[in-house]
Image (tube, rainbow, N blue to C red):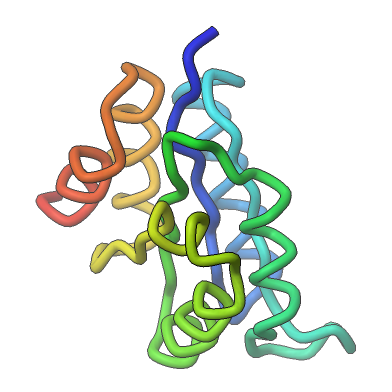
Length: 127
């Protein structure tokens, strides 16, 4: 099987992250790897750089990883997590400037069809 772009959903809310992953799964099944990460280690609202990095590492694919975020802090922590990855991996991870739910569904649909990382990002951002 050809490697496909994976998705990481980053939200300040664990429930939103889980719910978005559930919606993606209902739309595209298990065609792509997708994981959600939300909240802080203590369960409170927020985001956590080490948790985001672990999520990226858990679904990393040579085809790349598209990261969708809900708010500014999620984007900042995602950027820091990407910077901590090995350079060869970091070059294959991108943050999509898209609405988290709608963008995730569009990105997942493109990824499931075998699109490359840039096309997946564009699909998420064009919605």
